[in-house]
Length: 285
Length: 285
Image 1: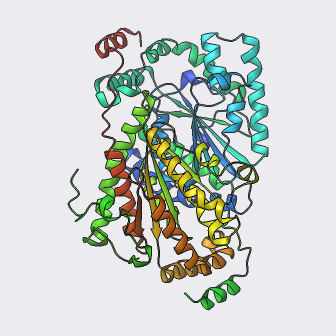
Image 2: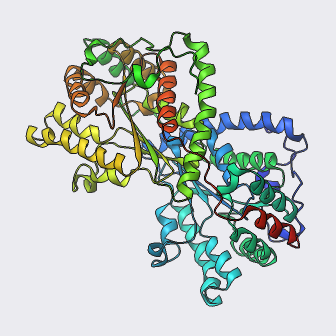
């Protein structure tokens, strides 16, 4: 499908390759998109229609015995805009076809199991678009930064995750992994805005400021995630997120690309269409 | 909130009282709404904004320890437009705050349990809007019409459901029950349209025509549902659904009313706002 305004498609320009350095990322940049904010809004609306169409094909595919699904994995610091992506990107498709799951601090039940247990249970069913707001990656970020589990434990998790994702992809799920990257200045502004607005106080947690001081350690932990888990089967995409409109547009395109790659046709009728028309015509009402 | 174009609010005019007869319903009527289709579209957009705002308050309430939630129960024959309600009404709010569940023919695991087992597991968590596409009511409709279980079994289910809903309401969930009612003529047209369009064949099941012949028995079974389970705590609303735009507008208003009745304010900050502003200002980045 034509993407006239992307000079390089989002899934190429944002893809994390072996030489990618998170520290070199320009958080206000709009890679691949030179047409500005107003054109982005128009493109978002068009992408929404395309997403809607493909989501319905995927859903139809699932309802007729198909095994495909798509999983969007969203990672990023507090205020990086994960919630806005869900509202404005995922909000463009039929809620019937969406399985959304937020992963917070593990519950006692979750802690009693392997770290992938809660992840497996939340995988999208055939025909569905799954959305993970945080994910399996929390378990190589938080424990590493806070040193709450021994290094041997989180060390082996990178490979566990790569193996797990290989298995998920083999079962028919396309994984679209996105890290939303904001600058410390932008994060400060967004936190200040939450503090200024009483209708946003519920989103604020004093602990967020303590986490924020650990930013250098998180940067290091994120770099390790990108280095060790951006595979050909499930590559990472690093999205500069200081400009919300760009982040939302970029994730729309990444998701759209994942759906397009499935090349789904409408399922063929598994019944005799003409015979059914005749049956319907013969009914008394 | 002002509803200038509703002559009688939807939750009043559509409410199923003791004298309601499903057989007397005019499926093309637009009770309470005399302003036509174009004005309905405008009102839908405004209702969407109000729904969005209240859904976010509800979500905030759930995130700060509140126990309230809202459950929309959708019932109706094939092609009555349940899916369209989900897409066009529920699609107006943040997917993060929605728990959608379709209930089909019970699985083997579900059959091994009491009929309310799968229903309980799908109830909305605090702060969420739950949507049931079909529900506990399937178990007093399908078995009664098809005589697949003895009458003593489904007979006692009406009271079980009323008790169950009383318990659900007591736990903090507002239940909004909607039956979408379409005429046999409109149903014929919608089924014919599915047969005419290859992109809709996946929605068609030859069994739908057999079910359709049972319409008089379903009408009787639905009337019993309305007679026996439209309670003050969880009343039914009968929505004429031959005009899709009316059904969608009406359900938007019913859901909005349910949310408004909660009278939710934004949760107060549980931290010292000024102290946090000072802490943020003192951070190095």
